[in-house]
Image (cartoon, rainbow, N blue to C red; front, side, top):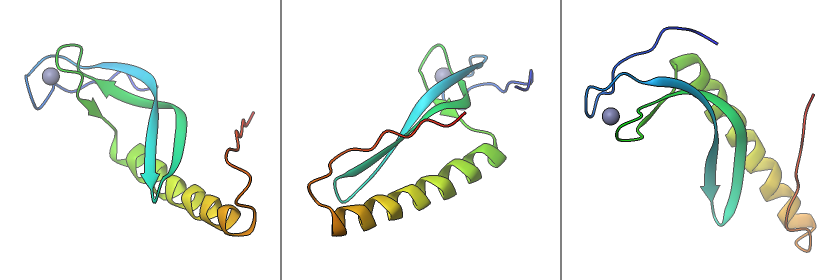
Length: 86
Ligand SMILES: [Zn+2]
């Protein structure tokens, strides 16, 4: 985890690194990615991702949403998967 932080673009406070869950939703399907490294403003709670992390998180969330849509199409009775990786 980087030690560099930036100031909040909304209120100018110094942000702090945190790991937090990010949710992505499409057509009622929700994908949550746990423990995403982000800079969070302690004052107004704005969240800032580094460009590399944002890119990875968005492209992988897209893959997971596509997988979830495929699952829903073939097995609509299965409503939730929880995947934990080492
Ligand atoms: Zn702020």
